[in-house]
Image (tube, helix red, strand yellow):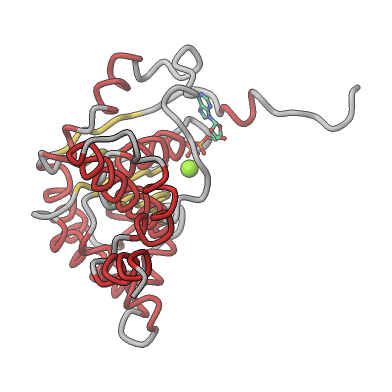
Length: 247
Ligand code: ADP
Ligand code: MG
């Protein structure tokens, strides 16, 4: 059998994707290389491709609605958080130590922006992340038993290092939904970091969940290892509103 075909078949058996598709180029470019150098580069290229694919897969499964960065966050506009604090959050040691972040504040102050930026950094760093609104999360929790896609999502959530729950408190939840959410928080307590954004301070959480005892137990778990980050000020959206018509 032709040697190249044999190499491709063996590469396929070993799932060496780069070797399968690029063996001709690899061999052409290897003429001046030592055996060691050749083998090293071949294996490095395989690992790089595998890591790239894994990152793409993780980004896809994270469901980030848009891409935001810490660099594009203007701390001269949002002065509740400093560049130094942002840089510290960007180091992601809070994920390693299973700390949660809770961004609190009115609409437009940058809660979702910062959550998305930190999600991207976590994904780049190799963590598994899932981003969703509270609304969508509640839907997933309620339909996990009857909907295949919700079941798959929930299973994925349980494997994540970081779960981002955006907009907690915009819509009230029923007693059953609150219980399901509480169970999720309890399950993730030892395995994942959470980022939660909310327009309501903790004093309003009993109203959101319709139950003071449940809200207290939830906050107890969520805030045990946690950085609460209150953001205040004007809405960035309103201040940077662009008009279609010039007056
Ligand atoms: P929130 O989630 O608090 O309602 P967002 O994070 O969605 O607010 O911010 C609304 C819009 O304004 C987004 O497009 C976001 O990128 C932008 N934005 C908010 N705060 C800042 C900021 N300090 N610097 C740059 N862009 C900002
Ligand atoms: Mg938001």
